[in-house]
Amino acid sequence: MAEFKIFCNNTVDLPKEKLKELDVTAISLTVNIGSEAYKEIAIEELYTKMRAGAMPSTSAVNLGEGLEAFEPALQAGHDVLCLAFSSGLSVSYEALDMAGKELQEKYPDRKIVVIDTLNASAGEAIMVFEAVKMKNEGKSIEDVQAWVEENKHKVLYWFSVDDLNHLKRGGRISASKALIGSMLNVKPILTVDKIGKLQSFDKVRGRTKSFEFLVEKLKATVKNPKDTIVYIPHVDCAEDANRLGNMAKEQVGVKDAVAYPVGPVFAAHTGFGLVAFIYLGDGVRIDAEK
Image 1 (cartoon, rainbow, N blue to C red):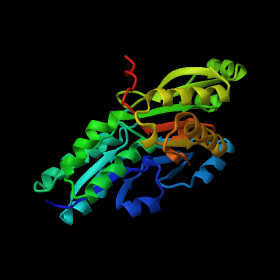
Image 2 (tube, rainbow, N blue to C red):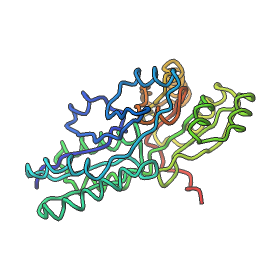
Image 3 (cartoon, helix red, strand yellow):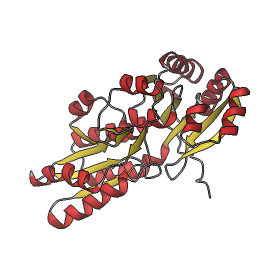
């Protein structure tokens, strides 16, 4: 059984040091700010640019980048397992899948598995952590593939978005909705659906009410609280994320709550004030929009 190398996208939101420790290679999406394109940008630098009025965008991984990432591992005699960013949020998976198929013809004796995780950020990282654990236990690439396919729909997401003006500037809500929502202190609640897309779920009035809503959704959908780690990504609101984590531990009894700054790819799209719960739950994601 050949050793396999694990790849993912930088949308796992893990530090380079952690990825190195795990022996995982991240293939980066690009953050675009004006005429500048960044494969890496410190989150604080991105915040500074956004506060100055920058409206970042992102670009997917392309075929060439997939080929460039995978081929050295194949040349060294390794198989390849790639846990890709959700196809509902980017075409990066399609490019990486194409790269895998192209290289399979060149390296017919190697195994190349590219999985659409339907996940992002900590949800994608949960897949990576388990893949590394199973690999280190001597499990095969097929064993890992089977686990990911079985569990990728079980990762649940509940987001509260604070900055409606950023969503308006990005064309994600209308100017009138942003204006009315801001006047009424409306906070949208978002989730990730069954095909890995970000979808509006509900809206509440006020930041505190939005936190209470997230905690209630966690309470209703977590499978084994005492064994569950809840991840809490945020965009420049660490105090709110820690507050939400304490609520999860005190009111739901989760094993741990880990707050962390979301990576540049997501910060570019959501604006300041995003905070979320991401966790391995009972797999009840909402249906995709028709």
